[in-house]
Length: 237
Ligand code: URA
Image (cartoon, rainbow, N blue to C red):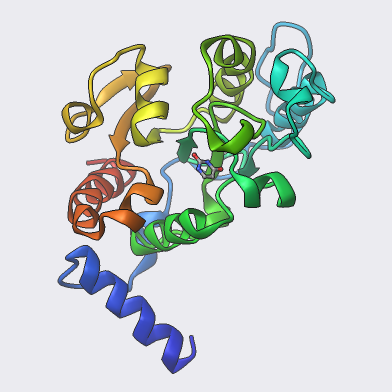
């Protein structure tokens, strides 16, 4: 890492309230993560048998197609933003919906909030490509308005299928909308965060949205607390 990059990285750690850095990557090792033997039976799926999570995720993308299920397809979306990352990830992040940058690039969390999310991922010793990142809604709502209930109703089945295929140990719900939508609650994010929820075979940890952190840097400390808990769960704690 170049000197300037390292300096920026350490400054960010400082901002997050991190008082030390562990260099050893041992916690990244996933128990039982060794590849299955070539002759291992593939897990049964309702309709098709997939040899890999990557194949199963690709099939979900194929089923989504050039989606016109909700009105967002006619409200200026440039492209569907399906999700990105490791289909075998232990850690999954779920946001709200694509913004302008994501709509252009076709990838979730690539704008300013996304760059902060990448730093948050790196702060717990992972790389962006180690995790899986998706949104509740796959198309950009006009003027970044909140997704509407009929849009969520049409779209969330694809997120559920992504979760059930990737089978992460931990899901981090980024912000009020994702947390409320997944947990089927109207409780405020201030009440939801700081706790853990069982969710579709995973542990769900709600935290503040990175866009909120850009406006309210003091909340980074709480996000760091949440991310330390994520790291501990991934390590088996
Ligand atoms: N905000 C989100 O919730 N998701 C994105 O992909 C980008 C910004």
